[in-house]
Image (cartoon, rainbow, N blue to C red; front, top):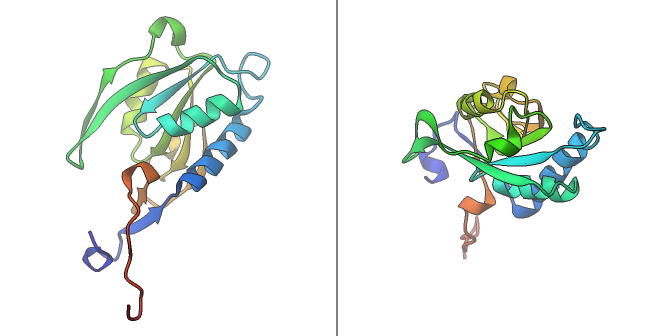
Length: 168
């Protein structure tokens, strides 16, 4: 979609690798010392796929060695569908979620997190970015963006030549 094809209400927010790294570290710093075990967290569960990079950074910053994933499918060819869990974490490890950090890149409507919270109701949910509709599903986040903003993450992008604004 080129900018001229975009409707006036559609906004793009481009996030670089450097920016997601800084924001995920900021998320870790915000979470540091707030776990239930003398401030420590037992495990990190990344929501695949977008939560994997931020979860890795959070786990590294907070020295959390127990890392697992949960996969929730809620998009089909860019159309949102009813979310369903297609891979669960080790439920013996996470239990009801006590002491567990669930990490994702973004909360949009909150429907994915609703499904995840049913599995681990006592987990602490943290996202790097949050939109207003999904914010109530998140315990900790770094940056709020408007509901009509589309975030372009670095793992979805490729570098390419861009024509200069004036002439060539």
